[in-house]
Image 1: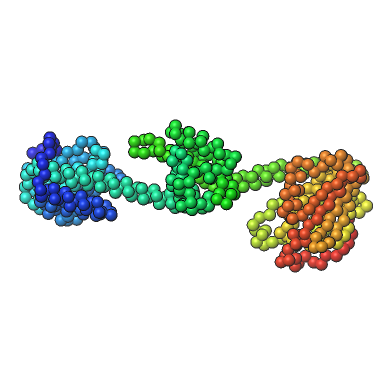
Image 2 (image 1 turned 90 degrees about the vertical axis):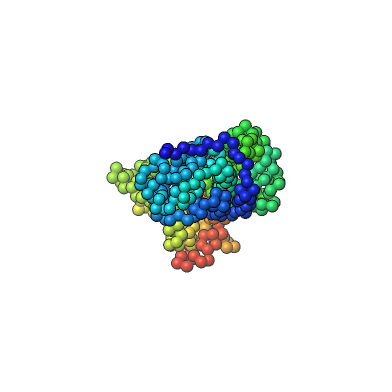
Length: 517
């Protein structure tokens, strides 16, 4: 006998006993807190309504194989033997029940019959479970003796299957919703929702952290409270684009926190739709990009500084060659002089390198202000001839902590580089005279140039000037420039605790007044 699916043209009215079964089943489904409770309620309804002591529920797994998820009265050996057997495939439409009055009278294989026979089963029914008309699994009723299924039993079985399918779908949707809520609530990003009038309807913990408003302070309030006054025109434009169904990805803008501070954010905006597909709101995901912006700005600054330094090095190297050539008695002497000065220039440039975290851990030994100045100006000394030096240093020396050697060196190196390009170190007769003094816990340094090769007003402009300004701020120093007929005068005032904080002055030696150069 070939097994044919049953096709019910019109379901008969259910008996009072069947209606009672369905009432109890529906009530238990309403109270169920998990799928296991849903399955237990369904197995009881199948057993009570169809008069069988054994039943099972199976669903397709992620690989499309029908697997047991709940059962009553079936051995493990039997379940393993028939696992995966199904008259339907995942997603089949319009599936109808398959009822077998006696397995012995079917055309199934003897192997399958033997397995069912050993379990003590003669009659059985396959009832499809569907969601939105698509098969997701089945439930089965088993009988020890041949069983002729009545229209009343089939109608009841289909009603149980329909209610079970609805409950599974609702439970899966609830689980998905809970997972989504958990994802939203635990997200580090700010996630919020607004209606089409711009009123905030949802607000997660990430939004609390980013914008400073607690959930009760934000929900029901206009989203415009997050937008700086100069950007208020953004919101109507965004809402307009969302109304047309558009999604806005990674829009970088600025928003305002509760305390009034501004924060750079990357914003993704998407439409919220109801079940009918109508747009009813806007969801926004905001990510703080302050650190990324800062890193980009620092990277750009480093690139510009590198470009500036390379140009300066070429200019200073050219100046060194020109100065050395004017007094060199021979080619060999010229080569020796240029080599010595370039090596000195390299040592001076090394003082201005960016410091690493390793330096902060180990610390760089304390040096002195005179030593730094001498190292930076050494490339402009006459090789082995004190009379040809173009600079002098007067006044007391002060220690400089290894932690601030780089900014101090960078500041003086920029001033010296400009002097080599345009000022007192750009001509054989030019000079730099430096006076140091200590006054009221401050170090005063006066840098006087004479014999400049260019107009003083052309000096210390552009990116080099920005480096000087930034380094001066880092050291909490004051710097002023004065252009006179004789040349440039730079006055620099640095707090002593900026040069050598109290916990880093040991090892610096006892500074003593003197004159070098």
